[in-house]
Image (spheres, each protein chain N blue to C red):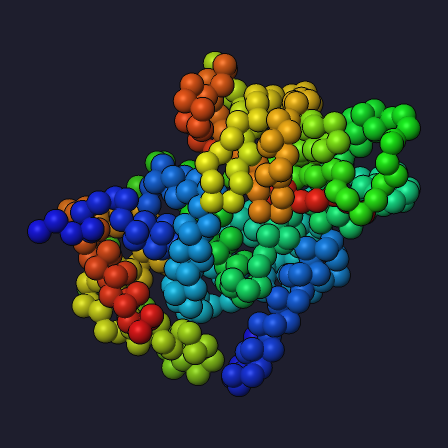
Length: 246
Length: 191
């Protein structure tokens, strides 16, 4: 009898992901699927709700105080950026909460500020208004560390991608940045690096798809970019796009 | 946790955790400290149980909470409770760690019949949530090898091949036990 149980692509893979029985490759495959499909993400959430009550059997154990101190230290490494941010002047810069919400690293925030100030120099035709002029995202690596920050200047149709961590890639491999509208296929934005900030032009047609439901992802591709127009290597970092208007 | 919370206490606690997490998303450090105070012992228990080694469990806990701080904005209270969201994040981190280190670790052989902690004690049952009781009923309805395999997988974070090696059965047999167990659990829980 040929049942769905015989296929590794069975819908049970979401349950297997939550249960923890998949090997590293199969786990990465489901994680990637969750990024591009709301349905997959919802299925995984549902299985978490079904199976997690089992963890109530595990006795609580008070962690040693040093763990909290280390957590605070790692957060406070980011804190100076908050104080060093330019004074409120409305719009993007005034929205400190927004930056705090992103949890940007100090160097990343400083670099992004500098780059955007350069771009934004000179008189603006329109005063900062309620309309969204910038959008931003932190692109977080699978280890939880911020890999890059991306800031989109919608007026000038460009995106600045600033590396925070400096992940290394195998020779001949390079990170490629993708825009993923919710539930749709990834669209290539371009190649980036893990060492220097990159500015990429944005297709104006792409801009209409930038919204709270879109996300960014970085995959590892051959140096010249994915040969297929879709990610071919592992997705190493992801982030959700948010409006940066004040 | 309260020794014997009533249903409404449990619901209040859940709402309170969600409110804290939403404040964390806005960068509120006091809310983050309170969230840690209320939830870290549960998550640390899980880290210790699955990773065993104390130092690594501490590292994992640190990693989990710094990620909670960074990703709190992606918490959606309409989809899952705060504890479910954090526990999902914790288990993902822990299982990823297990996958990274597994190659260097020989897995001990386990006789399924020798697994003792299959049934939680009465003290736990008194404070268990409604969801836990429901899941327990559905687990009890499974054939014993299916139940034990699903439970062992959940608590150890082991892969199919590791579980099969530990129980000394072919991997296909282990997959079949677990998948049939999961299918039956879903039917039972969603009924």
